[in-house]
Amino acid sequence: MKAWHKMDMFRLVRPPLRPTQQDCQKIQRIIHQHPSDKPRVLLLGVTQGLASLDFKGGSLLAVDGMKDMIDKEWIGNVPNKRTVLHANWLELAQASEHLAAFDIVLGDGSFAALGGGVPQQADLWKVAAQLLKPSPDSLVATRHFAPLVDSKDTLASIQEQANAGKIGTEGIYRFRLGMALRDKDTHQIDLSGIAAVVAQACNNDLEGFVKRAGWPETAVAYLSNTAMPRVTFSPKEVMVELANNVGFGLREVYVGDYEMAEVAPTMVFGRT
Image (tube, rainbow, N blue to C red; front, top):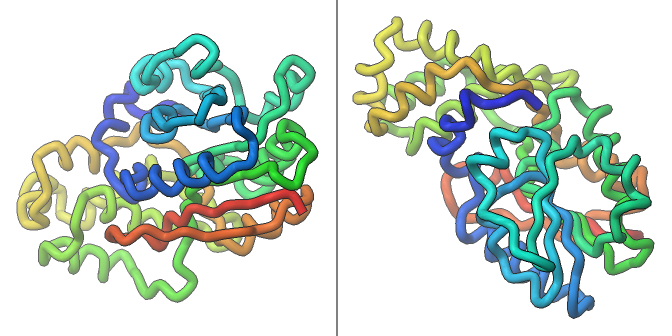
């Protein structure tokens, strides 16, 4: 996982790459419905909307491998309630003897944020399974960025819609470009290369393009940023298979009602 451009660019990210209040409320209900009266929750990342939820007397440990992200995004530690740890998610299993077992693992695009493809996502599933309590009540709830199986998007069709002001935000535009550029075998996307694609598509007139699309001026900086990570947007079916391999089954899929919400479903898994 490589740093965004000094993490400031992350503040320009909007749904579906950031969760909406709807998405966070869904996770809140999952926490409140959990049978534990003081659930221990592990958050993969420092997503503010999730870190600020009510854990009904329990506690949250948020883990992120990027110090800059923690410094700029973390909402703050609260003794015995909310703590952040700077660590690599994939190395957490090595410290499992020092961590009390968790009831719930939460994520927001966490599996998609792994640049090493499906094998790395499988490794994260193994870590989650090891850190969760050996109970049928143990849950993994994560928004996962997944491609649409029946998408007809091409670079040309996306650009035509954007020029006509038919794409709501620059984030959705970039998201759709990324999906169109995704390696169909590995499901990986090199987000750093999208800036060059955008520049070529708008004949290097990014400011004029942003105006035609109806987006704010900040979109120019967002769309020209090359300090972006490699990610893995694997299909929902792949996530289900990886979960099954470590003893978890899909229990629920929630999709919001905002633009492109269907590519960022909240998937809830429980021990089988």
